Amino acid sequence: MCDYFSAADDSAAVRVLDEPGGPDGALFDVVALKGIDPVVVMAQLEAILTGCTFDEASKRPRSGQLLSSPEAESAFIISVSDTLQEALATATRDSLVEAAGPWAETDELRGNGVTVDTAAEVLALLAGLAGRARSSGMRLFCWWAL
Image (cartoon, rainbow, N blue to C red; front, side):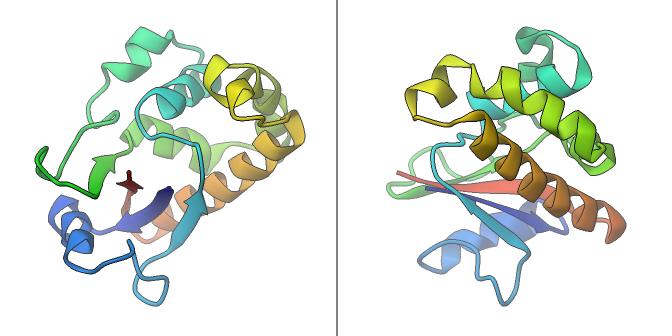
């Protein structure tokens, strides 16, 4: 399970681990997504939206960075790159629909049965989250439960 959410900073995001079940929707802006991992799948999305390579996207600051303890047994907090957050926040509906095709064709999403229509819906949810986070000076994170 991957819950994408916005928080003011890394420490506020990591404190989500203090409560069971992930970020509380009453306290955080949350989008729950299954099978959209914050490391590989989100770097692929960043590459598609920004026109860079997967390697470039995955090496950007905050891209899939583990913020919580690597010894955690049930969940982790992973950062989303500022570049991806900005790309999502500023994307037009047409550009999100256009990106949905290549993103749905990645091995990871295709292997999870994600269709182009589902990818477009996920992109709209992530873009909304990114836009709200941007307007309130927040950053994006993922609570990744095993």
